[in-house]
Amino acid sequence: MGIGVHHAGMLPRYRRLVETLTQAGLLKVVCGTDTLGVGINVPIRTVVFSGLSKYDGIRQRQLNVREFQQIAGRAGRAGYDTVGTVVVQAPEHEVENHKSLAKAGDDPKKRRKVVRKKPPQGFVSWGEGTFERLVGSQPEPLVSRMRVSHSMLLNVVARPGDAFEAMHHLLRDNDEDRRTQNRLIREAIGIYRALVAGGVVERLDEPDADGRRVRLTVDLQENFALNQPLSTFAVAALDVLDSESPTYALDVLSVIESTLENPRPVISAQRSMARGEAVAEMKSEGIEYEERMELLEDVEHPQPLRDLLEVAYEHYRTGHPWIADHELRPKTVARDMFERAMTFGEYVAFYRLARSEGMVLRYLSDAYKALLHTVPDSVRTEELSDITEWLGELVRQTDSSLLDEWEKLAAGESGVEVRPEMVDDEPAAVTGNKRAFRVLVRNAMFRRIELAALRRYDELGDLDADAGWDADAWADAMAEYFEEYDRVGTGPDARGPALLTIAESAGHWDVRQTFDDPEGHRDWGIGAIVDLAESDSIGAAAVRITSVGPYAAR
Image (cartoon, one colour):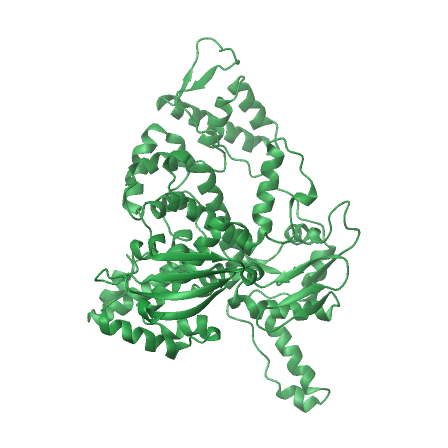
């Protein structure tokens, strides 16, 4: 078992992790500097906590006992591991303080002069006492949080048998107290009456062949589930999209994203960025402070297709009242990442989401599964299939356990025998999924197109300095381009596969990304080599720029 670093922006965090495990005798460094590689030093399964606090969607708090012990339990698998180890990293500021005090030695004067580093604002700290408490305490008791919804009743009505008897059993045979059970029964009756009034459910004079006394008057899609109540709306909303639009595939993704829960840290970061940009624009227009503050109240996070989706939602709700239990949430996270041509690490760094990266990853996993299971084959396009494959590979390369766990559960539900070896500890080679890898390469090249269009040569230098293309080299190359053309296109045509040429060879791909110039000459581009072995090593497209200029200059 090993640890691989897929994103350069996450290297400092993983270097600390490696240092912790090495000091514990669990790891040995087996390779180099730019790419971090480590090997397990002892044959045990280890769980490493980078912290004992988490953001739960509302606030930052310490882990509770149940959460800690559930995660720590992965240090061993029944029948495979008899011993496991759990390691917790100390808070970064405490580590720095410990190092400073150790450097001061036993001299009391030097120790008093040590300036102790303070925790970041809003940081919820932990210590050895926290660890001991989480290890030794009993898990918090489970609390029933049963609720009744339109989708629950619909699923019960759709099954063979007497729905009334099934609901009575469901609402009485549970761990809620009698008072709560009575309240749930009253809620169920109210929902049933609303479904009948809306013509969604009708009562039969005689039970049918399957014993139903009530039945649905609408068809639910095959994969309708309690945790996807808006999936039927998403399918219906796809019909209002323009399949000829150059943004059709991304618009489908926006429909799917509008049915998912909001990842609050991302939404908050997007709103903050949007308001910052709005303030800068209003200042340039000379708008006074009081008016700026008033106008800022209307600035929200980006919400593609919001007006269209809200109209479609209201119309759909009249015939499908159960979706009123669930709020429509237009947003762009997966789409935003794709349009910015960013990797997971770049996206987390861009919005400063390091403390919430687990939540972001879980959201992207949910978006991928919804794309895969909700969108009918009849409306899929090549571009949409590319986006789906890209999103799945992005999640898998960042944390393969999320998708492996889902696929394992899906296999079990389909009657396939589930074995531990079905879930790998390491993600599959990123080049193994050629369709997804081509999208990764395309995004990596388009990222450079966007940065060049914005004249962000420092950021381009950060990407390509190792290949000899530092900020100055990029600036010189693009200065020649801007003498001939006034801008670089970054729209759907610029992103499309038509402007990307890939020649596959053994061990590498030769790539040419053409600029979308305003004259349509298509005579400038970026040349690059993609190293396949290195790409598998880092879990992303390993792009090495070789040229930037007119085709004749190649």
